[in-house]
Length: 302
Image (cartoon, rainbow, N blue to C red; front, side):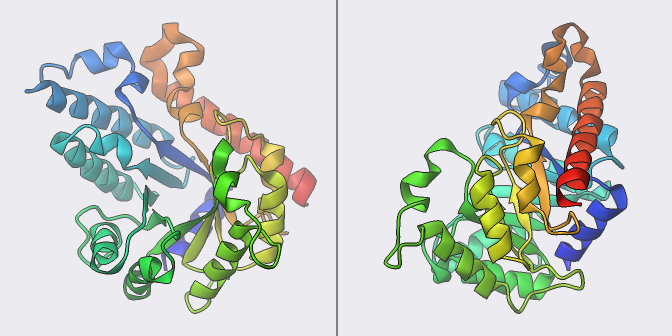
C-alpha cells in the first residue's frame, strides 16, 4: 500500500515534508526560463521551462524530501503542453523514488468521479500518482469511486477536512445538528471510509487534509482520527509555523506530512542576485525546514 511507502519514506529520511510543485512561470527565474522560450510556440516554451525547473528541483532535493505534491491547476492553465508537462513531472518524480500526491481536489458523482479517479489513481492512470486530493462535499457517492480504486491499486486519497485558507470556516466551522462543526462530521466519515484500508504501518489509505494554519483544530482532529494520516498545507508562505504543526502528529512524531511550495521553490527570491542557484536555495531551505520541524517534534511531541 502506498500509505505504507509514504510512512516508511518519511521515517527513513527523518523528514515529514513534501515538495510542492505549484509551479507558475513567475516562480521560474527569468534567466533560466529564457533559454526555453524558442521551443516552438510560447505555450510550449513555457511548459518546457516549467518542466526543466521542476526536474532540476526534483534532482536536487532527491534523498532529502520523501514526497512531492503537484498542484494540477498550474499545469492545466498552460493548456495541452501543460498537461504533457504534468505527466512528465509525475513520471520523473516517480522515477526518482518520490511518493507522489496530485493535488487536484476532485469532487463529482457517479461516472464523472470514476473518470477523475481513473485519470490519477486507477489501474492504467495516464497521470499516475500515489495519492490524489478529494473534495467530499458531494457525499459518499462522490468519494466511493476513489475508495474503490484505492482498494484495487493500493493507492490513496487525501480528503479535505479542515483546509488552511482564511475563509474555510464559512462552511467547515458551521455548527451541525448536534452542535459540532461540520468538519468534525466530515472527519468521522473519513475515518469510517478508511476503516478497511489500514496498512501495515497503522494508517489508512483514506487520509485527511488538515490546515496547519488552524493548530487547535488540527490537534483535536489528531485525537479524533488516530488511524488517519494528515497532509498539512499552510506552513511557510501561508503563515503556519513549525510549532503550529506539532499537534497534528501522533505521539511518536508520525502521522502527518507538511506541504511546502513557495517557501521551497521560491527560496532563491530571498537573494534574487543568485537566481541561478535556485536548486541550492531550495535545498538549503529544505534542510532548514527539516531541522526546524524535527526540533519541534522532539521538544513538543517527545
